[in-house]
Image (cartoon, rainbow, N blue to C red):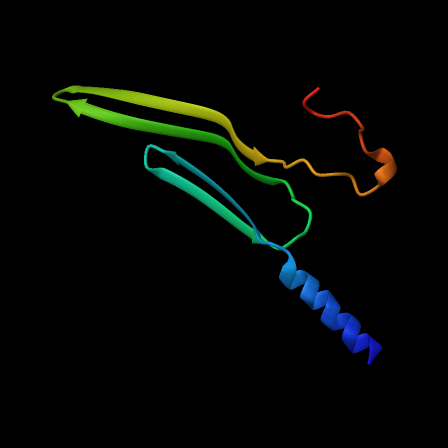
Amino acid sequence: MKIISKLKNIFRLEDQVEANIDEAEINIFGIKVKMTRKTNLPVPQEFSVFIPRLELTKKVTEGNKTTENSLILNSLTIVSAPRHEPSDPSTRNTKSLSN
């Protein structure tokens, strides 16, 4: 019976943890990249979206003349890295961030 009650307590704790929802969306000239993560982890985790290179080329023809427009973007990055208290109390910084 002890094992069953321990398992019940574990599942109750998981139900009590509030869901963390992270979303990132990049929309460039109609090209849309969206990423969503939902987790019940008690400690916030890093959430990152990387687009290493984006190259767009558009050709426009007017009569006999053709022009080409290019846009090159390198290293588009979205990062959410929440700060949280260390798990080891001896490593905690005693200074306030506002100082």
